[in-house]
Image (cartoon, rainbow, N blue to C red; front, side):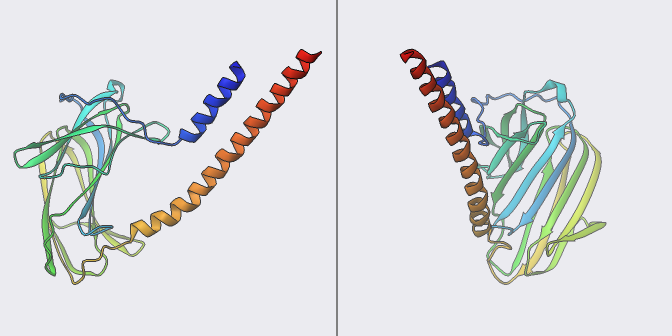
Length: 252
C-alpha cells in the first residue's frame, strides 16, 4: 500500500510539474534598504496589443537577504500584471501573489520574492487613436540601481520614431528596431523620463502573439503530455507487477 500511495503521489507531481507557484498574502511592508545590482526595462509599444508592453527584469544585489518583500513603480492606473515572478537559480519562474496600490501620480506593486531575481511584465494603454502616437514613460525605482538598461522597440509599420533623450546605440532583431540606454549608479527614487512619439496608420499590433502562442503551446503541450503519459504508464506497469508478485507470494 505504501508503494502504491507513493506511486500516486509521483503521478500527481508529474501532472503538476512546471506550473507557477503562488505565495501567501503579501503584506504591506517592503525592505527599503535593498539594492538592485542590474535591472533591464523593456518598453514595446503596440507589440502584441494596441497598448504598450513593459517588462522589468533584474537581480537584487543583496542575495543573502531573500526571501524578502519588494516594491516596484508602475505607471499611474496600472492595476493588473501579466507576470509577477521570482526566478530560481535554475531559471525557473515562480509566480507570486501581488498587491497594487495607487500612490499620487503612479502605481506601486508589492510582492514577496523567494529569490533575488525578478521578472515582471504588464500592459497599459497611454496611446491615442490618431495616426500620431505619443506618450511618456518614467523609469523610477524604490531602490538604488548599480546598472540600469532600457530598450525601446519601434512598432512595425511605423515611421518618424523619435525618443527624447536621444539614444547613442541602436540595434535590429527580427525586423524590429531597438534604441538602447544605459545608466550607472542610479540613486533611489531617481526618475528618468522618455518622451516617445511616432506615426502609424493602422491599429494592428506588430505581432499576432495569440496565434503564435497557440501553435507553440500545441507542440510543446503535446510533447509534455506524451512524456507524462509514458511515465505514468511505466509506473502503473511497475505497480501492477508488484501487486501480482505480492498476490502470488500470499498464495504460496
